[in-house]
Length: 74
Length: 491
Image (cartoon, rainbow over the protein chains, first blue to last red):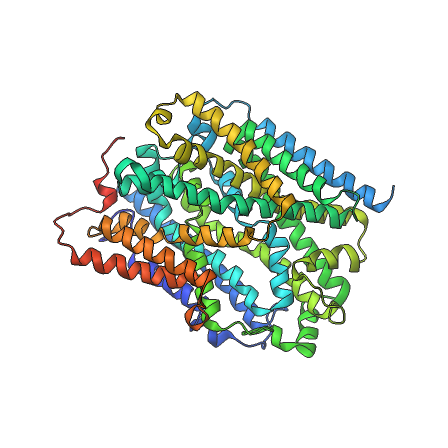
């Protein structure tokens, strides 16, 4: 891998920016409505709940990649 | 047994269990300062996860967050947003802090920063120490006052405010005094689990009992008061205010000393990263609590509350037809949120008070370790007592002190990032940026209105970072290493 040890990859950094922009202006603008309701929640609330999960999945993948690389080096 | 007696008994039972768990954690623990302050730097995944969760979700989660949903509506999602985004900042910098802390023996945040930016006589460390304690004592007071209020409301006054807050404060001080971070670890594990289970049970029961389900509840709000469900909410919070509050809170979360210093306690970097992977899921705790707040919009439409923070208590204790034991559990869950945060605040501020402030002079620096340890323990008692007395006196300036002091702490972030990642980071530039950023934050907080309704701390951070970067770039530098890399291998 071409990135420094301990530093996050470019892909992960882009994903972090994406998650951030989704939760503030301007990203959150596109979700600022009530319908469709998902899982009983208004869409705007569901949007936040969904991005929390998206960050969890992103971090899980990053962690798996990190530890996989460490194992390769060993 | 009357209802309020049963509720009181259950809550006292909860307190006893927390106390026992906290005191038991003392067993098998050596008497080193590192053990007391940082759990010997070998905290594992499970305990560290719940420490971080339980310390971040404070009395605010059960009182303030539903209050936001009830009084403002959608802007309350800012809490979910910033607590989730905080993980990104942790992911990027916590592994470095953990590693360097172990290598150089750092125990406080001030030690880290003053090692990167050495000042004559370590003045920077002293300033950070004093400001941190000034931020944390009001924060602790709010937790203790919250506990007192919860007791009084849920037992219908059987346990008055002064006694309720004294009980909560006393239990916390006792096990933190005795067991240090180990005691906090096991009690936070228990309290963190309680908070999650109780929050979900209460949220879903409320929606079910009054509306027949969460979907039906939001449908009714949509029919009666749709303005609550989208931005800018019922009180008109602009996107600028919302977004900057999310960003500055997420960035600032890492700078809270009680969070920062937990990174030192991790067993290794892998454990820390595992905690962060799971952490976003913990913020789902807020979903049921916000649901209760939203329920209040319809349920209390005819009799609005003067103080939105009481919405959860009003619904659970007065409106809902819940058996007394459920109210007892609900109270214990909310108390768990307040007390788990209080324990961390008392522990961290005592450590800072002793290590960065009292031990500032060379003579005190030379204190043998066991003396420093007992001093820290007495510090826990002294700070808890002070916070309790402040809770009784309830001075109106408390929140201002908290906002002001914490506003300054957040301004340390650019220089921290510079120290970790930037070769050109200049010490002079960092100090000028910090001072200007702090002045701007305080000015916008207490003096003039912030531009565009932006968060004062965010404005301070922007100016602070700009000054830091520009002046650093202007200075000729032959340094090829960042401040962190310049640290000597051993201290």
